[in-house]
Length: 240
Image 1 (cartoon, rainbow, N blue to C red):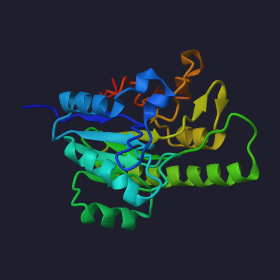
Image 2: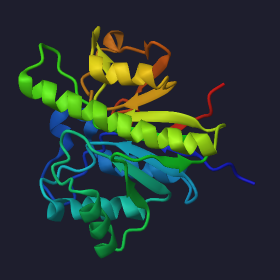
Image 3: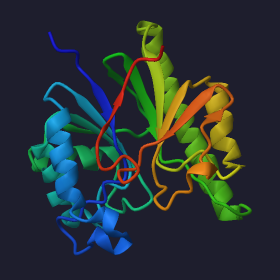
Image 4: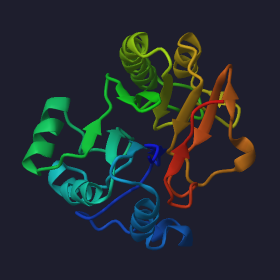
């Protein structure tokens, strides 16, 4: 009997409904959609789940993102999507649910103020926020809101964990909670408060490996942007 697996990959930057070739960002992005498709099909089975923490589509509105959702629907496995900084198509959960129904998409769910039980794990998360200079008043509003959304998600995760105490809570963010010696203090405080063991994030592309932060308190951090993973979904294994 095959073990059901959970994968993660962020920053797909799909553009089936817009003219946004990613190779302008470097040769490593050449044919990236096809490379994602080939790697995905080689690894992911229909019973598996793939978490996608943001920057799914370049579509500025729903009509421009529909082709990207249909592309994901054509790939094996369930998909759980959260919001990234480029996901301008994002709407309320009710509208996103109605969109999936209209497109007859059955394999995509959305992570927003909620949590999912997924094999050995409980899936929690939000977009997050990060700046590399001082926070403006607008930044403060956004990071406070994102910290509260993360708490809402983790509270839902804790409810699930009370029913399934052997399941590990995993956190998925779009923005890194820390990079280059700078922490997003409010987000990191939530990770510490809830004693999250592992957090996966995307967003970073032109990355200096030596600037990556691998741990905050007891929370281990991992970058899972598509180009960092060579456009191959990363298998999440149970913690040792």
